[in-house]
Image (cartoon, rainbow, N blue to C red; front, side):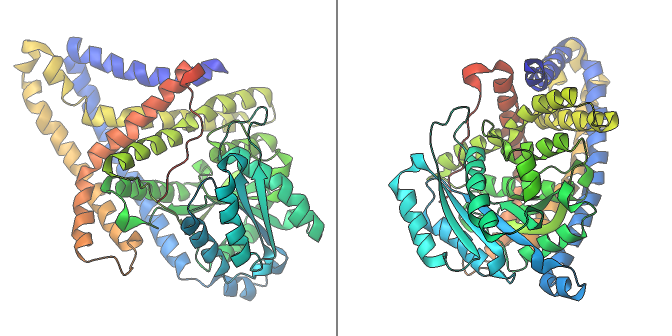
Length: 488
C-alpha cells in the first residue's frame, strides 16, 4: 500500500524534473511535446465545454421545476421517504449555523420527514454547546426529529475531523431518530452537509425524486452541485475564482456520471451507510472515500447519481487578504489530499476479486490520471512553454523553432481564452446573487478577474496538489491532518 501512496507524487516529480532536464539537453523534443500537449488540452477543453453546456441546461431546467408537485403527479411513493441530515460543526459562528437551519426550515418537503442532527466536537468546548442549544431552542420543533451529538476527542484510531464526527453522529442518530420511530432503513436517505450548506425549498423534492427514479436507488450516492456563493461579494477575488471553477468542474463531472465521485455535501441510502460501517474515521477525504467504500462493498455495483441541482456554500474568507490566500491554499491542498484514496482503492481491489476487472482498471486509471493532471498540467502548459528558450543554449535560441515557439504556444493558449470568457459569462448568468449588496460595477469586476485564471491554476491548483502528493509520498510527520476552512 505504501508504494501506491508514493506513486502519484513520484510520477508528478519525475515528469517535472525530466521536462526541466530535457529543456536543457533536448529542447527541440520538449517543444514538440509542449505543442502536442497544448493541442490535446484545447481538444479536452472543447470536450469539457460540451459537458458543461449540457449540465448547465439541465440544472436551469431543474431549478424551474416544482419537484414536490412532480412527485405527486407521477404517483411515486415519496411519502414513505425520510431524510436524515447530519451537519458537523466545529467552532462555527452562530450566524453561519443559523442560516443553514433557516434554509432547512423553509423547505416545502414535509418537515416531519426531516430528521436533523447537529454534530458537535467535544474539543470545541462550551461555546459550541451554547450555539447548539440556541439552535435547538429556535428550530428543535421544526423537524420530525432533532438531535445534538458530541463527538469525544482522542478516540483510538481516529483523526480529528469531519469524517470521525459525522460517523459518530450517524451511529447515534440511527437508534435515536430512525429505529425508535420504526422507520425502515431502506426508506431513509442520509445527507451530510457542511455546516455552511444552504438548500432551497425544492432541494429535498429533487433528491427524493432522483432516489425513487434511480435504476438502483439502494446502490447509489446522490450528488448536488456546490455553489460557493453564500458570501460572494465579501470574499477575495482568488477565492471567488476558485469557487466558480470548482462549481464548473462539478457541473462537468455531473454530465459524466460514470466518473462522478461524492464530494463535500452528498447523500447516501442509510442501509448502504450501515453496510460499509459509516464514514472512515482516520481519513481527511472521507467525502470521496465513502464512494469507494461502497464500490468495494457491493463488488463494483455502485454509482453516483447527479442531481443537477445546487446547494449553496461559503467561499473561503479570512481576516485579511493574505489570511484568505493562505486559507484558500490550505483548502485546495486538503482537497488534493484525496490522492490518499488511490492507495486504498488499489488495496481494496486487490483483496476483492468480485469487482469486474474492467471496472478496476477504469477507476485506477481515472483516479491516477486525475491527480496526475491536477499537479502537472498547469506547469506544463504555462511554465514549460518558455523553458526551452531559457535553458536550451545559444544554438537552440538562434533556431527557427526557438523564434516561433512563443508564437505557436501563444496561438494555442489564445484559443483557450475562449473557454475562460465563456466561463466568466456563465459565472455571472448562473451564480451571481441578486442581493441588496450586489452592485452593477461587480459585473465588470468579476469578468476582469477571470484574466487571472492562469495564476489561479498554478498557485491554487498545481502547487497545492503537488504539495499534498509530496507529503503523501514522504509520509510520517509530513502527512496532513484535517484542516477546517474558516468561515467569517
